[in-house]
Image 1: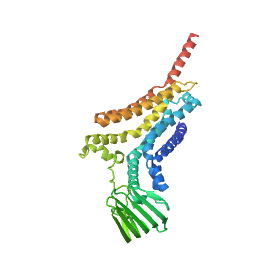
Image 2: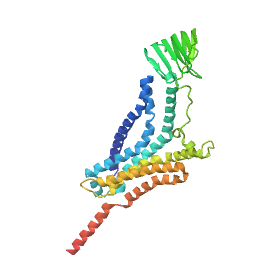
Image 3: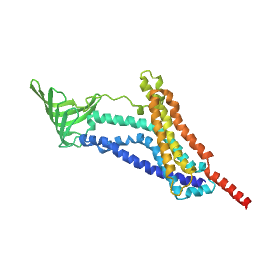
Image 4: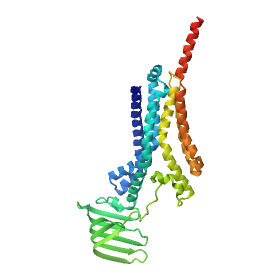
Length: 379
């Protein structure tokens, strides 16, 4: 029995990895399109682009893992039925419950892993992603200025650099600042360097000229300097946004009702998210059982198990759809929180009950033996 469980477990794990990695790769490509503009226009380094897009993967994996496991279990058991492997196991006296132990174990292990991902991995990844996003949009030092090209920032500043030096400085720097509607400032310098200060990034100009033109009065001012520094944040000093729900820790979410600074709507939103972090990981085990229960207790059909598979897919859609619907209702009223738990517990209990107590193989074999005995008596 242990050998059979290891065999089924290995097949499920291989299928799950192939499906989940394929889906993650496709979604990574779709999500990366959001950041292509940052690479092409601002010249961001490739490693920063890969880092930002990779930080979105924990959130996507948490959503995809139950569905990927459901498809993997469904595929493995349907193939075992087609190859008559499951029929042989049932003929050897192995009950549906014993045949379902492998997906149950894999589902529970994946549920434990997702508990870590949803409560620790996702909040840390979201915080790091927002930090990098803020730096890219509001910090000039994140923009890599290319030699011999004009780089236009989002606030009307255009910068040209002739050459990058090995020590980090640049030569032949030109800046046109039209961030203010009434004043145009032009800066040219022999050398320059971007430096980081407590108030933000600044550019240090060496041996240059500053020209200023008032567009209303057409007054012209010029200043020659040996050293001059100016601030050129591309984001205009935008403030950091407050933490989102996904960035909050589990204790902050579950105890949001005690936070008087939150509005009633935000309080309910935080509390529901805290309870979802308890429930959602266990949908891996629930969907794994849904995928195998119908195939294990259903009647064998040489033409295929299309009806049973369709029914299991419908059940999976209903469970996941109800989870989304009840979550929205719980966001309006916390009285729906028990229903949120019931949507996970009831399908799990129904599958366990069917696997334990509904055994059509033994039922048919028992009646077949009685029919043979009756036929012998009659003869």
